Length: 418
Image 1 (cartoon, rainbow, N blue to C red):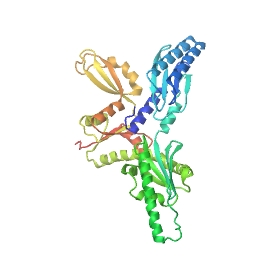
Image 2 (image 1 turned 90 degrees about the vertical axis):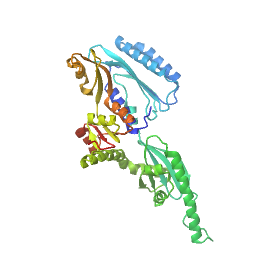
Image 3 (image 1 turned 60 degrees about the horizontal axis):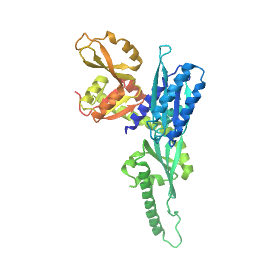
C-alpha cells in the first residue's frame, strides 16, 4: 500500500528487493511467480498445481520436497487474493539456506509492484528472479509532457524509456496571414481571441491529465517557436500544475514526432531532476548548520529526541542506512531497552547477548523481543511528529556527505535546540 510519500515508497520497495536478493537456496528450489494485471487467479492456481505435479520428476528427494513445499506456500498466499491487483503480483517462496548444513527456513514473500508488470512467469532457481522489479524501480517516476504550437497540442507521459501519448488537440486558430477583406487589426484581434480559448482548453486538459497523476515528478513543455512561452506566461494553468513545470525544450516538430524529439533532448536533464531535489534538501540542512542558528541537528539520539519533542520540520534519512532497532527485555525484571545495531553485525550481537546485564536489576540477561528497520522506526516517529520526511540517496555529493559525515540521520527543527 502506498504511503503517499514517493521517496519512502521507493525506498521500501528497494529495501525489500535488496533483502530478497541476499537470499539463496541450496539448489534450484526457490520459486518465483509473476502475475500480470488482468490474469485470472483460477488460471494461475491451475498452472501452479500442474507445476507441483511436474516437480515429482525431480531426482533429488530433498529438492523435490522443497520445491513442492514452496509451490504450496505460493498457492496458499495466492488464495488470499480475490483478484490480481491493478499492477500485478509477485510471489516468492522457498527454503532459504542457512549456515547449518542441511537446515533451511521456508519463507514466503508477496510484492505488489508500484507499476504494472507485463509478464506471466514461473521459475525455480537457487535465487529469486528480481530483474523485472529492479527495472520497475528504475522507471517508477512519471513526467508529464506537453508539445504545443499555435496549431495543435499533444499530451503524453514519460516513464523510464517509454513515452505514452494521452491526447491530441487541434487549436482551430487561423494562420497569421489574414483572410481577404478583413482589416489586419480586426483579424489579429479575432486570432488572439481564438488563441486564448485554445490555451484555456490546453490548461484545463493538463489539469485533468496531470493534477492527480501518481508519482508525477514534473512536467516538460516543448514545441517549435515562442507559443510554449506565451502559453506558460499566461494565466492558463492550475497553480499546482504550474509549479510542476520543470523546463521548456525547443523542438522542430509537434505531435507525436515532437514528443519523441522532446524525450530525446530531455534525457540528461531528467537524470538530474531527482538528484537536484535531494541536493536542495541537504543544502538547506547544511545552511542552518553553517549559520549555527540552532535549527539543525543530526545523529540517532539527537534527532529521535527532537522527534519525541515534536520539534522536527524536515527529517532527512539516508537510504544507505542499514541498522536494526532492537528491543531487549530482561528475563528477570522485565525491564526493556532499545539498542541500534548495524545489520551486518546483528548475528554477532545475538551471540553476545549472554554477556549483557540488565541496566536496571544488573543481574538479569536480555532476550530480543522485537527487531525493526531503524528507518521504519523513524518513519513512524516522523508521522507522529507531523514532520516532513525526505529519504536521500547517496548518488550526489550532498547525499554522500549526509551518510558519511552525519551518520545518515539529520533534521531541520521547528524551533532552536539551544
